Length: 80
Image (cartoon, rainbow, N blue to C red; front, side, top):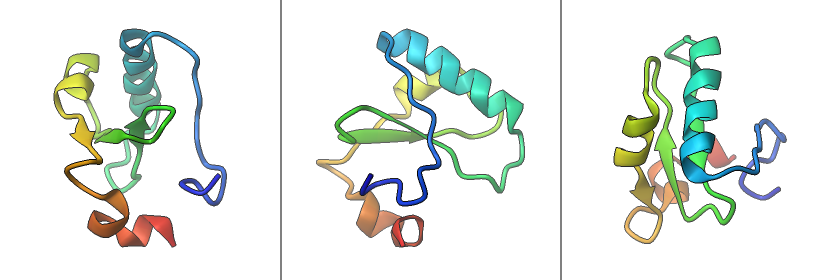
């Protein structure tokens, strides 16, 4: 996958609110703040940075639309 060159991802086929619950749960299993985890959609049209303690509601409210912010420009070190 172009966006995840090392295949370090978890994928779920679920409604958005269920996927956000799973993402928050996965983040709770990995509380290290130096670990970068993102929640994205299938088309990689946006993302939310999963910070320790994030809730499903916060995942929805902190969504960054990639039409407004290019992640490869904003976070080039993640895409090397």
